[in-house]
Image (cartoon, rainbow, N blue to C red; front, side, top):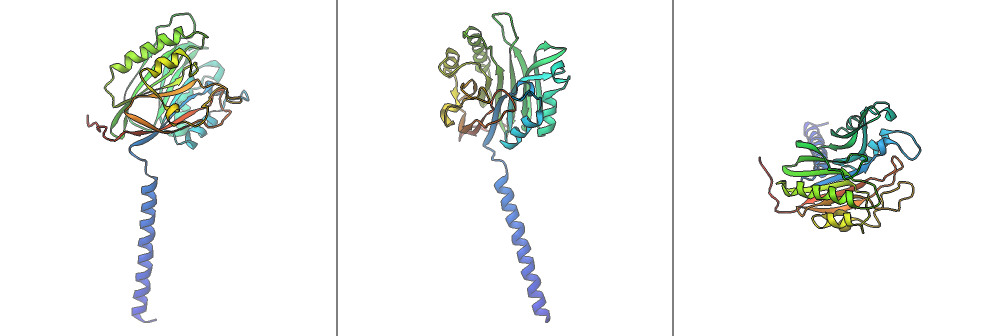
Amino acid sequence: MRMAERLYRWWVVGVLIALAASLVGLADLETDPDPIRFRLMTYNIHHGEGMDGRVDLERIAEIIRREGADIVALQEVDRGVARTARRDLAGELAVLTGMTCLFSNNFQFQGGEYGNALLTRFPVREWRNQHYRMLREGEQRGLLEVELDVNGRRLLVLNTHLDFRPDDAERLSNVAEILARTKSSDADAVVVCGDFNSLPESPTHAAMKAAFQDAWEAAGVGDGFTYSSDRPVRRIDYVFHTPGLAPVRAWVPSSLASDHLPLIVEFRWLEGRAIRKD
């Protein structure tokens, strides 16, 4: 083979390698996270117990991974509780999903703690847990408040699980505290999510709608029922938000890993929102 032919073949090989590398680079660009979009999930996990009576956190983690959630608000979470073998459920889910975990204790139960938790892929700026002023005896409820740095923007996520009683008195009292907290926030946007134990036509929902937008109403398709997971007939889990965000889509995947179904909302930051540098 003449030298010129050898050089030409090596040149062709070099071009093909460079082309393949560029295509890989384009693929990487296409799969890079969109800096103005993120996915938030709210999920009452029933201390990890599915409809088959088994506590199986891998099923919960698989849903989180499969749906690509960046922020996960969890309710009914055990830590050190006898019924779940003294396990740290939120901590285990953090390991299974590769996310940062924050747990908030609302009351002592079976020798351990019981409350809400949040998993996130974003840096945590600050967080706190506020116990509601309860009107009646029963389970202490709380509001987990987490401020995140979402690609340069400040997002305040409030995760809660409200009272289950038939009348709305306790829930409306809790909503008043939620509104007072969000009025003092200087975050770029606020999301309030969780198990509200109230239907869309309830006074509690109306009170939340007076200050926030219901993401399902804007971006969901269908009834949005989240309870119960085997026979969904009620929409009681919600994601509310302020105008700084626009819900792109919202959906409720099927699963029997808890007695509730998870609700996921994909958000987009609205154009023109300032990117904080502080």
